[in-house]
Image (cartoon, rainbow, N blue to C red; front, side, top):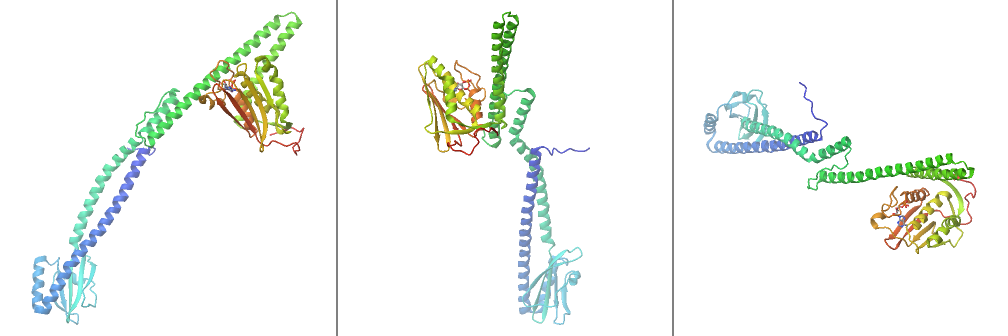
Length: 471
Ligand code: ADP
C-alpha cells in the first residue's frame, strides 16, 4: 500500500521541519558529549598509567629488576593476559622479561625511547581492539607497557546506545507533538479558510472568524480578515442599492418617454405633437447625459478618460456659471457672488469638463443652502496653481459624511437627494487634470469646496490658443 504524505499541509511541513531541526541539534549535542567524554576517559587512563610508570621507576631504582618482575607478574595475575602487557628490553633491544598476551609484541613500538614516558594509541587487528601504550627508558633498560582501550570504548558504546534510544524516543514524540502544535497554531488560519469557503459557497458576507483573544499573529490576521469582510459586506450592499436605484431611475425615465411617445401619437394637432416630441428629446438628452456621466466616471477611474485641452481664460467659465445660476439665485432669495481673479489667468484644460465640475459644486451649494443664505465663487492664483473656491452658508456636512461625499453614488440623508454622482464626477474631472478637490465644512454653518489646478498660464503663453489637444 502506498502511503500518501500530506506534503501540502503546512502543519505537516512544519512538523517535519521541527523534527529535522531537533535531529540536527541532538546530533550536535551528542557529538560534543562524545568528544568530551572520550577525552576525559583517555585522560583518566593516562593518569593511571602515569602512576604505574612512577611506581615501576621507583621499584626499579630502589629494588632492582627481580622486584619489578614480581610486581608485573602480580599485576598480570590481577588483570589477566589480555588486559595488561609489560615488557623489559635491554640496550640491544633484546627481551629481558615480558608478561601479557604476546600479540602486544606485534605493535609498532617505536625504536627509540627517552626517559620521559611517551604515550601512543595503536590499533590491534584482533579482538583486543585499540590499545594505549607507553614507552620510556630506565637506566640501561627500555620499558614498554600497554593496556587495551576496550573498557573506555565499552563505556562510550553504552553511552552511544543510550543516546540513540533517547534520540529515537524524543523524535517519535517530537514529530507528532510538533504536528499537533503546528496544527493548533494554524487552527485560526484554517478557520479563516473555512469561513472564506463558506462565503464563496453560500455568498453570505455576514460570516465572521471567531477570535481567540490571544492577540497573536493568527488572531490579528483573523481580525483583519473580519474587518475586510465588514467592508466588503458594506460595499456589496451599497452596490446592490446603487444598481437598484439605477434600475429604478432607468425604468422611470423609459416609462416616462414611452408615455410621452404614446401621447404624441394620439395628438392630431401638429403643434401639440411637436411640443411632446421636444419633451421626448429633452428627456432623452437627460438620459444620455446620465449614461455619459457613468461612462466618464468609469473611464476616469481606470485612467482612460481623454481630455480635450484648449487654452481659455478662467474668467470665461466663471461667467458661464454666473449665467446659469443668476436667475435661480434671485428666485431662491440667495446672495450669489462671483469674484473674478485680479489678473488675466488662462488655463490649458478641457473646458467643458472643468465647467461641469464647477457647475456641480455650485449646483450643490444651491441645493443645500436655504433661502436667505450666501453663495460665493472665487478664483485666484496661488503660486503656480489656480484655486477655485465655492463657499456656501448652507446646512454643512457632518464629519462622518465628509469622508464619503466624493464616493460614487453617495447621497446624503437630507430630503434634497440627487443621484450622488455630482461630486464624484467633479473629482474625477479635476484629478484627470492633475488637480485636487477638497472640502471644509461645519454642520449648520456651511461648506467650502476647493478645486486646485496646476499650471495656470499667464497671458503670454506658448501653448496653442485654438488647437484642441487630446490627452
Ligand atoms: P447629490 O446628487 O446627492 O448632490 P453629490 O455627489 O453632488 O450628490 O453630493 C453628495 C452628497 O454630499 C450630497 O447628497 C450631500 O449630502 C452632500 N453635499 C454635497 N455638497 C454639499 C453642500 N454644499 N452642502 C451640504 N452638503 C453637501
